[in-house]
Image (cartoon, rainbow, N blue to C red; front, side, top):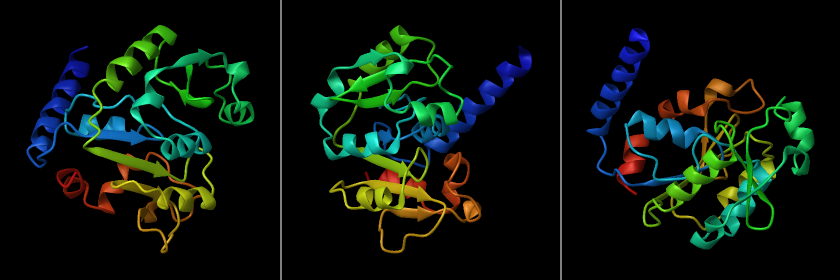
Length: 210
């Protein structure tokens, strides 16, 4: 218990120190996985986005961004795992039997609340954090994980979004938003990109320019 307390204190202290390096505190990260969660924690900031502690399969995420608006985020419903359109992928990841909540926005865009205890918790947190979104300071993040193909990477790069970045395990020189992470040059995709991405780009500068 004492060690846990000390570690939490150290993380919060480090977050406050890191926060001196940025000038924006109310930005909203729209992410396909937990990358945004770790960025908010890095600076000890509240979640100004509902896209934390969860993941979205790439095709669904791109359709969300192609139709992104406050309205599409307002109404959420939940489905059982057997009703998911991604059953093969869930079984491959050994997620199918985990029982975490799966939300749906729009017609069929699935939100996989991997780190939420139940539907009530997921709904409450989603609705609270949707209200916190700052639509004037949005940062859209994608990666080659969650079933992304090369075509999807290029599709993301072509989106008319002002602030966007995409982490990949191989170079895409034709894509301005792509940040190649050489740590994964022998892998098929990036993993836990929050641990490696800051060496490849200026996170603080990006946030300060939002």
